[in-house]
Image (cartoon, rainbow, N blue to C red; front, side, top):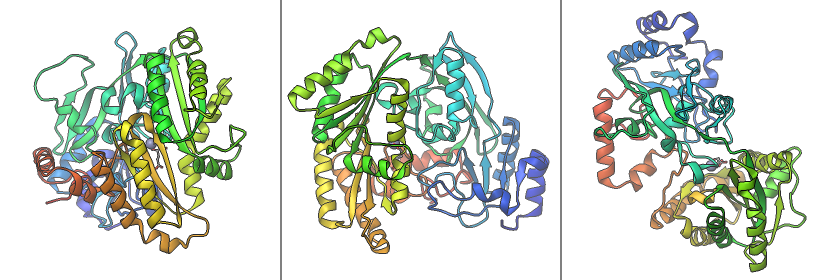
Length: 474
Ligand code: 2HG
Ligand code: ZN
């Protein structure tokens, strides 16, 4: 912990109360490094407001004293977006105690949640009202809705329900100077000028602090048809996706691609996980259809898979016959990042290209890796229904760790340049944070960057909001 100006801490303590501000090293430690341990920051203090009024006062004070404020939710960022820098001059603003579900409106299919609500808590609140909140991520038991909003989170149900941005009706935001943007409307139709609230979605706390959101709910799907499907190649995944969407009337909720190596890593490193199919295959898709009633799904999945088996698009399939089997398939998929972590050194690339271009992209990027990274293995998996792959590379067991890691930058450049050539995105769902500031500068159009900087200046003229994230300070 850095020595802080005593008057700043006294002012913050006066606003937050003794239990609302942490300064001891042991108390602060978990807020100062990121989920992937890429960064180790320092801070003057960790602030834990309980009310919006406290957020208002603390931001006004930090703005007046030009103190950088780093908003933090469940601290599950993949890009270091919620970690303070090493200067020891910033404060972390944890939203974890601002965690009430303010209201649920079943008739309007909406609810209002505070930023610190854990995603699973929002899902439960919707379910308690016989409704459904569809955002679904591996970290849903710890990530917070404010972080989901600020990173425009994606996950495994985007194909059907869209990303976080599409699940928002309104926001409450405290601006850098402490003014509150009250835009918590639950209206579905509101064409009154610029859509200011949408600027905060994906802004990663660089424009203001989201304190609450009005979220869209849906009818709860009571029936699921889930299968792990073996396929010969990535093209088969794209073909099968098109067919399933067509025959099911767009009831495909998830369509997750996995290579053989991902299954092997999961079986090797995760307790209780076994290969769902008797033989190994090159690629797999975990696909799920959902509907309000089982009758609506009929045997659509079985029939479509049988036809695809005949056509050679599908090589084999394991259908989930019970909720337990379904959960086991999802457990396998959701723990692939953990299995990959346990395997050892690796590189991550959260990329997207148009769905139809995925086979060609994987072929070209895969060939580049074969030629340049012989000590690495491609572990490309993810939300192929959205064109989003986690184009990750794991070191082979016999790789020399330091030599492998030394090539991270070359690999990233080659993969991202190719993504750019395909008209894709170098951050499909994980955001920019601190990790990809340079990538944004490199690949965004100059006019886009100019406009982003203008927006930043308009909302945060003193640059106190999450400094150094998303955009470099000018
Ligand atoms: C997932 O889809 C997450 O499992 C994590 O977005 C991806 O660890 C990754 O690269
Ligand atoms: Zn993902």
